[in-house]
Image (cartoon, rainbow, N blue to C red; front, top):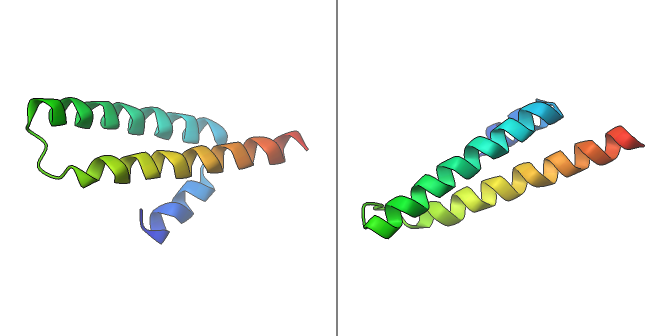
Length: 69
């Protein structure tokens, strides 16, 4: 994930982050399915997608904490 994409994530609100995580998890599921079928060429993309989901989840948690203060 590039810095520009991370900055865009910071500007999103909680609902938008929930939706982004939901879409990323769906994409990850599709990639895992492709891997089991032997169709996925770049298997490193799985770990990259997991890392992106973790970044989004961390930002979401931070925003939820700051909102409740």
